[in-house]
Image 1 (cartoon, one colour):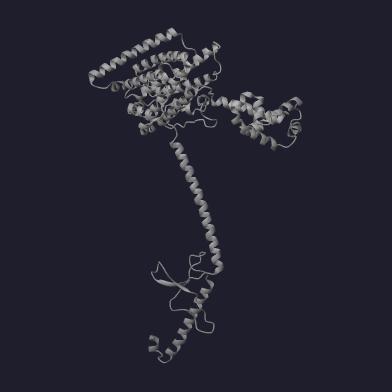
Image 2: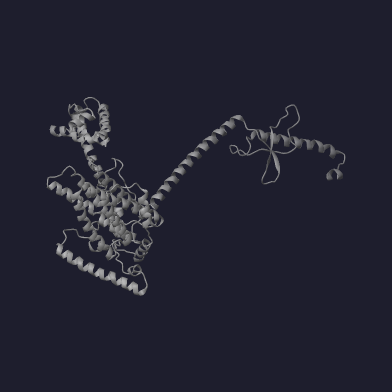
Length: 558
């Protein structure tokens, strides 16, 4: 316009209009060309969106281009609104849905994989956190003087003669008696409790040679916080089914229980050690009397019960070692009372057995049931503290050591496959397991009183069933015997009569295995063996055929 005003006022307006129109047409064609060559909106298949300038909808003429439906979108960087194409071709839409579906599936699979990894990590953390902790030391007094059978540092072998051992024990216990009364007098004059004085002089055994004295003292003090209510124990006994017993047995039982309440009030660990020292005696007396009856030729029908009683005594012995490691035998008075009471209790039960074995078993049932109530109340009343304390080493060795043969022997009232397998992670698990052991003893003592009751360990039943199944299998495979069912097997082996119910599924399984074999499978074995081992003698081949014909079935069966 400035040029037009100065140079050519007449010609400039006429030229400006065509030039401006040509620029607009060129600009519209460029925009149209870009729209046709560009694909989709931004965000789909990685193609940028096409923004249309407001006010431009096409060009005039016969071939007028119609823009697709427009959608107003907000541009975050410019702060203005633009119109963008919102429609997507149908073919590309289906392709995008497939891609989204595949991506969703991949993400779901990855999610499941991560969740499984998280579950495995949680399980590993739980296993590490539940790993049994071991008591850092052993507080047992007798462990220092009499030794421990599981301590490899002790030299095994025959003991010295009785006179030498009695002399040594007398002087040792005499010194402990003087110390016991000295501590009581010192506590009386200083105003402190005997427990506070004894803490400074207690016996502590280091099984590993790297003992943390302070940790042992702290653990011992925590054990001193354990409590037991005598009234709560009697309440448990009143709430459970009463054991039927004659008055001649009930009165000594009540006297013994009330004596324990009086002597060990507020001292649960010493009470438990006393109980386990005495509780071993019945099984020793029963084995003694059964052996005596056998020697006299009076009674042999219950000879197998001696194995059960020995396993029960072995179990009570480990209960004793557990409480001993917790310091239950530290007091001279507790040792004196427990050891002398055990000797008296042994001869009382021997005499009672001579009069009536049923009454002897009944008295033991009462004592064991009282132990179940006592340990149950103790575990419940101190649950939180017991779960925070580690288990003694002897408890882990006995309950989780792997050799559970004798542990299964006294579980006479359980079926095969129902054997208990304790999992020890804390002192609370130890107490609960001991409580359950005592319940097994109650069931065994009750079974011993029944006329015609067959008291037999699970291990014995397993051995008999294995022999019966092996005999039947051998007859099925290697002979032409007519034994083809459980009744026929029992007729051939009458001692299997009490196990007919357990043998029935085993016999059915053997029949299924036999029917699945092709005809003449045994006859083909020698040819195969000769091809593999051509130098093998015929006698060795026959023996190998017999062995091979039995093994697969026994492995599959058991």
